[in-house]
Length: 418
Ligand code: UD1
Image (tube, rainbow, N blue to C red; front, side, top):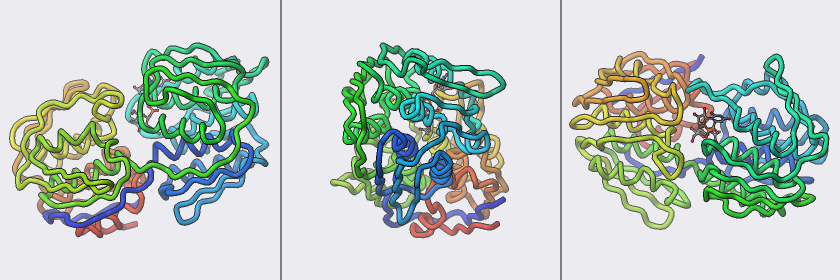
């Protein structure tokens, strides 16, 4: 197992370019299964989750490789519609291959997906939607065996919750289905817009992505194209939180800075100064953060659940008391017990965390419980007195590209130990 050793109490200072988005690139890679020919994705992050997706593509018979941030996928030779349990367990996003495999082969076989243990994470909405589009699904023995005896047919689907993954699966399955699909209460996350943009560039007819109602007119065939992956709004927020808690300065290079609108005002509430010019986002932390009050995690454009741990760290060293209400995943406060070891004053009741800021955190031995909880602990370590050891950092490697190298550029004293 690998760990980070972080020496705290130094301000970050410097510039970095924000990595490609993990949550953006994964559905794009599954979409490549639907395209006949070679899709080219530029600006891809090097992450273990991305490797897991490439392994799935290769297993399916595609030619897929990543070099210098470019992933080329030629799916012409794809000849399998089954994903093994081992490959499925690697990450949660493996479930987004379901819509793509049904679209390509009219069949799919897989087990339940793995991923962060931040909640139950059922896939009932995905399955209900695939059934509405004509799939027959057998769910015995933890395995999903899906076929479409009459082919996929467009349908009207109303989601009871705007699930990101289910919306992606529906777009993937519907774009080559017969006829029109109307998706109501779709997720509005930027990753949905990006996926629709890519599919449309390949010849799909999707309108309304980014809104609650999406219309998809099925087409016969998708043709390959080249796509530059959008940058990661969640990773950007983590780096900004590092500037906030260390009272440092950071310049982020990121196209589409408006993707950060759900968090910018909250950073400003804590006394951070943010200046955005074109694709440059400058943030300057305050000598002591002010309280941001209450945050409720919500589907986009509400406050992202993926950034709540970053803000919990900020609240831990801010003046006054802050509250975080987690509305999306039921088990997303696992990092709190670790943050308490560092001196944070946090009370949890069900989905609510009440955080009383302390003037300093102190170094401790902590364990990364999941991806975003883990990266937040590293940020906490940067502003703590003394040394912090963060164990089980394989979680962090799933979503942060060259995390310690980026942090070293910013002046953080961090090393990886195997
Ligand atoms: C995606 C993101 C994740 C982010 C989350 C919410 C990826 C790879 N991951 O996860 O980082 O935190 O969106 O923004 O893009 N649900 C059901 N049944 C379903 C599907 C979901 O009950 O069939 C529930 C989930 O348990 C959860 C909520 O809906 O409580 C939101 O889940 P969803 O939007 O599907 O998240 P993911 O796509 O898994």
